[in-house]
Image (cartoon, rainbow, N blue to C red; front, side, top):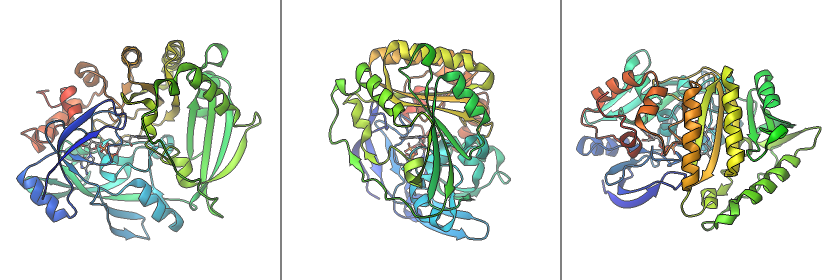
Length: 437
Ligand SMILES: Cc1cc2nc3c(=O)[nH]c(=O)nc-3n(C[C@H](O)[C@H](O)[C@H](O)COP(=O)(O)OP(=O)(O)OC[C@H]3O[C@@H](n4cnc5c(N)ncnc54)[C@H](O)[C@@H]3O)c2cc1C
């Protein structure tokens, strides 16, 4: 297997790595590679920070291991190689009445990456996290491949799901798909006046898929205003998919300056009539709205951006209000800000979800944003919440350990699975997660 020198970045492009990448096409090649030179696996690098980076070292790009292995049409259990994307599974399976039970906001996430971050979707309140639908994982380590389930190896399974790739390379997974009606969604959108109304609507929503867009520039009585989206899958004539677009180069700083974002957000809000509306969309446009714009991460210029994502317990809505006030006062938010209610579902020791509200906001990479994100992390910690490591590029060791109460269990399993630390990534080193617990 050939190693090739490459420069690569997390999705936020604020952090990057230079190292050797191998891209095996068969499980046999992967097994030989890992026996010879174990290294962390990476998917499509849709993690924003450094979870998918190994600067100065090797990494195994899994995207060629992207085949369907087996599908049981009666039970809906699908066995796939770990490098296949969730978008591809949805594209093939939705017309047959099945979808991945959980899909994050990008269809480019691979199954391996979705397991390693135990990702959540717009249905987390009902369906839980991705790992809760995974029945078996085949892990490759220096001694070869091994199939694990929650029953056969509970500790290793929980350390692998949401485990940041530290227990071995996931070569394939068997997962329960969810029934869907077809490859369209019926989407109801309505304007929301402020944060209190938003949280009330999220609490009462009975839709299968619910997500909120927040205007993070709004203040005063309009603080936390936005659009609530509620959707169900459906069947029928698929409306034409809008053509893809591309951001061809790094945008200049003024593209996302405070006045531009304010104007954009006001117009975006008015897109939905005051009485609300119901529209029909192809599933990918609803689930993966940004995937249509290739390289949209270039909009933040060549220094890239950071995403802050936290979850706080339901009783801590005041912390969310304080965060939104600081964000709008700072005038640094981008148009991309998302609010969701999460249920309690999580499958791994280091899984992000907890029952509560999750807020995600993007900020152009600059010193003031780093300081603001530090404040938002303080508020998260005080509220008993946690930040999402798939998005993080700035946090510190002590903070993260305190937010993840099952960290010690994870660290013990990881030390057993990878005693020499061969699978460590930049994120794991930055946060000292493999240092002696
Ligand atoms: C536009 C956008 C929207 C998003 N929306 C959401 C969302 O709604 N919910 C959510 O939860 N996340 C969301 N994300 C984050 C994304 O789903 C996760 O970061 C996901 O892990 C990315 O998958 P990937 O295949 O690109 O993995 P990478 O980013 O390449 O890697 C992520 C981690 O997985 C490990 N890994 C990858 N493949 C393997 C493997 N085969 N074996 C072992 N370890 C492996 C890596 O070592 C790394 O630790 C979003 C990201 C983007 C860009």
